Image 1 (cartoon, rainbow, N blue to C red):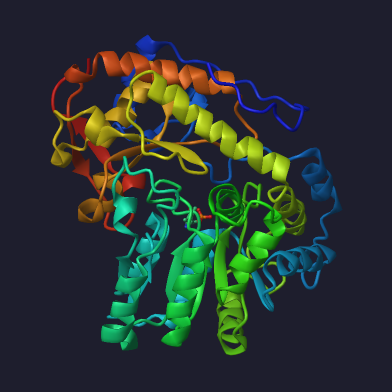
Image 2: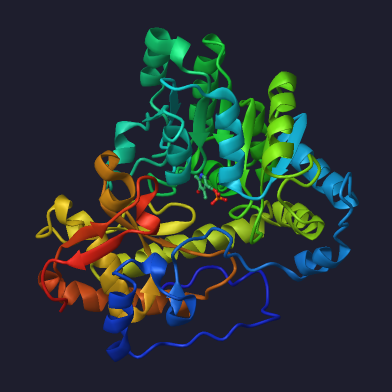
Length: 452
Ligand SMILES: *Cc1c(COP(=O)(O)O)cnc(C)c1O
């Protein structure tokens, strides 16, 4: 087994988890309509559904919770967070929101009109949902290497700048903003290089278009830049992140990722008139401009978390643990998307289960098997989530920050080994119920033949 660097923390509080007997799991799956989003958390042993809002907070963050200032307007906690965001990003304006999609909703609701187009490397599901629900097109312009699960390109999250330039030349009038997701969650948590950010920024500036980061995992992205990009290895993470943000005009952020908190988000940027309009919408939809949808204590914990996520010992452990988790899975003969990304290992269900055609949802089948064999919860990132936009059939095993040990992850690799031995008997699935937007959260499924 692979062991990376020792955890740069020690454990102060523990939460008991227990393993539901295998004999009870088929009934639990049936009751949840074979959708792992609908399984009770107490029935899950290792929960790799998401790294969003699932981080363990530090003792410093819990201390910050007690320092939270709950004043309605201009609380101390707001000013502290505003100053932290400004020191990291350099942006002039900052607006707190209750999570990332609220920031997306405010931004897109303010600037988009039906028929417009918003390009990104890959839009994440909530971003795509927010854009499409406004009658607007969410366009993915990731480089070709980013669509190939086995391609070892070091920055598979990069955007194809030629395609972007072409789009802005041909249809620039329809494009009010360009987004860049760092790291590229949908494409496998893959980073975007500093060189690519510079190039995308230059194309946007040439066409006078604002460029925003979907910045959820900007710190993890910066770590990959430091480790993989020639000439960056001697720069500090803070220098790299500062340059990243200097190349864009603003960002939406889900603080539930690299903010190391359980809830929170924000919008930041430089455009005075845009932020005036956003302030108006924030007051209507989320709350006053100094708390958005957050409590004072949450603002305070986020201010601490943003700094902790830029700590290099933390990032080295974090990215190393995810990489080693990928190695454990490869060692049992299960194909994964390579190289491993920052926050998750993505199992390549299409190559693991070639007998299940894409129309029969191979990644959904593997998600169900992981629960059946290990009471493990992962998430389908394929045809269920993205319909006809699905480029790959992946099961994402997201690693919460500072939560699970190497032994927990070895348990998951062992369950995958068992599933791999019986893979020929795993059936395809069909959808029996779905909603119009973001159907994966609530859809119901049925196996096309009995489970092994
Ligand atoms: C999580 C996520 C979002 C949405 O953030 P929430 O806080 O869950 O609303 C948007 N974009 C990306 C890339 C994400 O990973």
